[in-house]
Length: 130
Ligand SMILES: [Zn+2]
Image (tube, rainbow, N blue to C red; front, top):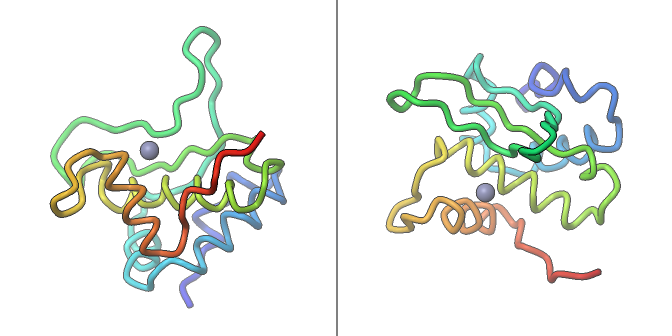
């Protein structure tokens, strides 16, 4: 089992969210875990709210594949929403990170690609409620 603690240092002040991220990290396939753990640029952090711009969940960086940072940015509200929804969002963001925010096979839409990959990991978009 890879060591995930170094990936989630920045979640220390958000123990509920940290637990949710950890359970997703433990559930994803080993080769994906390996990809994250072995990449020193990969980390999980908390949203950076900018008035007038809202939240940025994913910040793609310019440059060829493999360059730049790979930072998964999560909203603090994922600490409090339903666990199924939080797990789905976290897995979706991890899927973007694994795909370098790109397509997956024949799925060219990056959002559909992230959803489809997360679904293969067992994290389906829950029904909208409330
Ligand atoms: Zn997305």
